[in-house]
Image 1 (cartoon, rainbow, N blue to C red):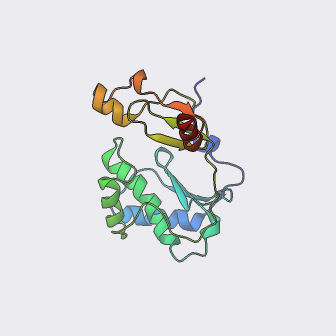
Image 2: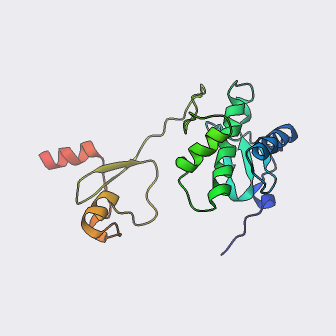
Length: 186
């Protein structure tokens, strides 16, 4: 069933709009020639380790309130605005942190921006219970969740099938690399 996402359906009741940051964001974008839809800024208390997110098509930036007192919060806002600005300028599918985004960062005053923050955050340790192996190159992929779709090894598909999916290179679930080696040795 098709579900149309609008700002009202995306916005969660626990999100808090920040008028000050919304105003600041739009001033920053106007200075670099953006004249698209007005960008809105919200705080999402359910964010854990992500500093911010940009919902490009919705002209929406969501920030993590845990980082409100961090000195680099302005940089995080500009980082997310760079995603919206780069998409606005190119209006194509572009890499999230590609050259268009780097140019937008530079225009917004953060020329050497990296794709990840380095705020002190406790990260959840996810145990990888599922392991998949390519029958072609034998690479092993550890996963937290099972694959829901048929996934093939990109390297092997590029090498042997011009980059198109082929079932010969579909990842096969294995027990674990160590158990698999023990079975082979026995």
